[in-house]
Amino acid sequence: MLTVAVEGCCHGQLNAIYRSLPKPVDLLIICGDFQSIRNRADLECLAVPQKYRQMGDFQDYYTGRRIAPVMTIFVGGNHEASNYLSELRYGGFVAPNIYYLGRYGVIWYKGLRIAGISGIYNETNFLKPRKETLPYDRSTIRSVYHYRNTEVTALKLLQPSNETIMVSHDWPEGIYEYGRKDQLLRCKPFFKSDMEKHQLGSPPLMALLRHLRPSHWFSAHMHVKFEATVSWKPSQENEKINKEEIELELNDASEETADLPTRFLALDKCLPRRKFMEVFRLAQLDVPTKLAGLDFFYDPEYISILRTVELYRKDIESAGLDLPEELITTLHRECDRQRILLEDLETHKYRELLQINSQFSVTADASAKEVQEYTNPQTVQFIEKFLAQP
Ligand code: 5GP
Ligand code: MN
Image 1: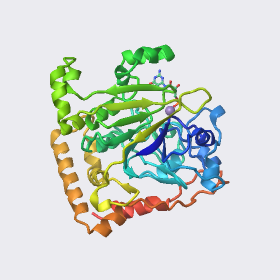
Image 2: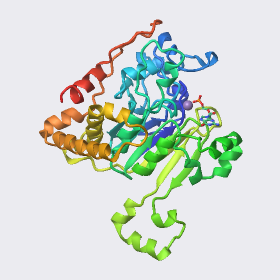
Image 3: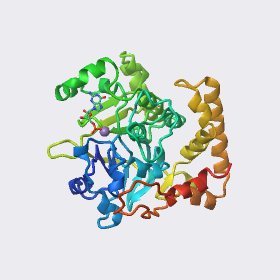
Image 4: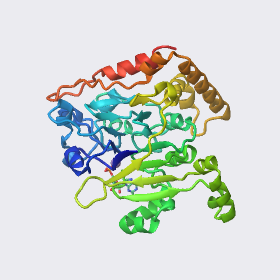
């Protein structure tokens, strides 16, 4: 079993968050608005009103003055050093012991399989290809943190898995129907009109939740704690619970796991008296045989998908909201081909490729004031490993 702490929005408050951790924990997951601000230049790339433009705690972790006391994994939100996160778009260490999952990613850490998507939903930009370059203007400083259909599509190519933990910043739209909606509305009455319009959260993420059926889904963004349980038992969904049938099903172990519900939990930001952290005891999965003994590695299915999506990026981007069946079939077929190519590698090569190196290095100077682009060696290595060869 692993002890995992989950935190809602970070907003640069790493010191307070680490102080709030019960001891000991094996992992901390942060659900966005992380604000990995290295220097003054990064502040220029953060979309916030002027009064919130603060350095926050991250710089000390970046320069090594402080060390994250526990492995920390996070996704991006809508307040980020978007330039820095773009330099690490396939994920990587932003500081020693602090790992960014990338625009989307799936990794294994000590027997937990964690998937994530960064950013928030925006209807206008969802279907637009990414084009943001530095320096950001008033428009691109926002669109840069809007996740795109290509990224959600990639995660939808994963097989459904009730052994996966999913992390996002904004909520799957409609998740409030699966918990104490009345309490939520008492706390946040102004959510009502958005709920009525089905605009409280992200429709594509709800579609992803329905496809993936993960064991847990953690989010933040709304600055309120909210729990929900989504059951996948068909009989329950129809509200015709046949008790005998369920008892029968419970005797069958495989049926039982196939129907495991998704537990959704959204947490608040780190402020006194707010519910911003929750601790879980989570069972470790059996690591795939060829990767036995590795603590931290890229999920092989994710790598096959990433390679597929890069090959078909143009087709996905021009397909619109609903991909044609033909394209979906092609994508699945290519994923299978990529998976086999990967699995055919000799064990030592396979392990070397998928292992995530914790080689953090400082790229931008902490005193830099001018926005400029840095090449991150972790991104260079990722591209060499997975995208450079056909
Ligand atoms: P952030 O910290 O990302 O700037 O904003 C979070 C705040 O925006 C929270 O207070 C949250 O309640 C509000 N918020 C985020 N998304 C929505 C939404 O879809 N509808 C409404 N009404 N408020 C939202
Ligand atoms: Mn947010």
